[in-house]
Image 1 (cartoon, rainbow, N blue to C red):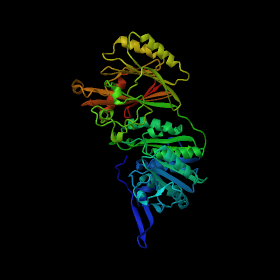
Image 2 (image 1 turned 180 degrees about the vertical axis):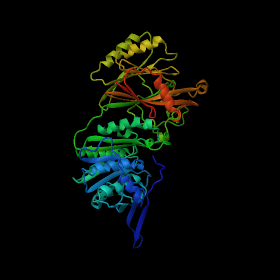
Image 3 (image 1 turned 120 degrees about the horizontal axis):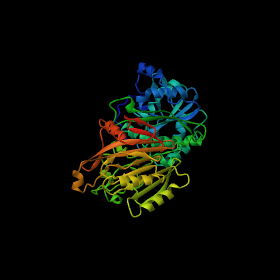
Image 4 (image 1 turned 90 degrees about the vertical axis):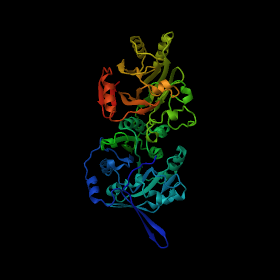
Length: 532
């Protein structure tokens, strides 16, 4: 989880007496660069959605590539709030110290527009009560906190801060107990900042796909899904959501959504995404949508690989086995294993034939699996029809195993008969090549995504040139968002194709598709937006 980032932080420790530390002076980003900060503060960047009501808390990034967007949010906040105390929470990026929740009891944050002081009363109360541990050293380089100091000094010069950083390995219960302690020190003039960067170290199209789930989880106050998100501090998110819920500030608005790739042309493989979100008084504004990562052909013996309907990258696998899922996915996981997390459902396989109901973000999703069987084809159609008649069903997904061979006209006819039963997403398995998809009767028919993994125990599979497509599907009430991730199989292992070839692959994928409705295309981000 550590970032290799060059920081602009410096700390001056003032010593008095016999080595006693009186202050830890923490400089902001761009220390002493008055002209840089004047430029940032005078920027006229506008938000996608302006702040229109009084917020009680906010989620902001600590990645200063978006310095001007941060300024725009703080400028808007200053129109509505004038806090006496600002609680700034974020991750302990460099894992300094052993305590799970740390603070500073003698920090002075220096900026070009003034100093930001601590709220000593709140810090002392939480420390004495055992909720936090003092580790001044941890704040020497912690940009999750000092990134915000200059904005606080500029727009809230009278405010005092309570800096808090969380360990990466905290349980929900531990964070919940901390929020119970912290809530006793939250008054009418308290404002809360959750310092969080979102998707990391994957291509921008992957980040966009993951950020759908993150926004839905926050807007829906879905605590069960927080630790499955692809963000840099689940603990910070859990804490601010609990505090906002306790304060009745559950009305969520996203004011901007950016990505490092928007600013640096060379950053197309390893990026960081940012979401700027406020919490205001009121009930939730539910986001109804679900994300599904779905893949192509798999080798036999999936049960031995530990593949489940919904799989997360927090499972443990026996590394000594020759054929384990962890080994097979070594090249597709990406840096810090982030590519294969962040979706609501990651579908490698569905073991049992038939259909089962799943629910996520207010969406009722029917997940089905069948294998091609001429003798019971009519029975399969009847079973799908019954499943599709489920009350208030929002989405029906079918994984269909052709076994082998080619896509014949007869098979196409059968698939269309299946689609008529109410299938929204059809994913075929067993055919070697990637086959152009089509829209039909309101659904998307992906006849074949090619290969995802091959059998590393078979020489014939290892010697065969193979490729495929991974799909990131986000579905809400109005649209399908189809994210395209072309892969190649090298020595039996799936690997995402380089950015230099992905746009061309996406254009081919879309050009060959039979799309009979309104479609928006973003080639650089590898996404189709198809009206449902």
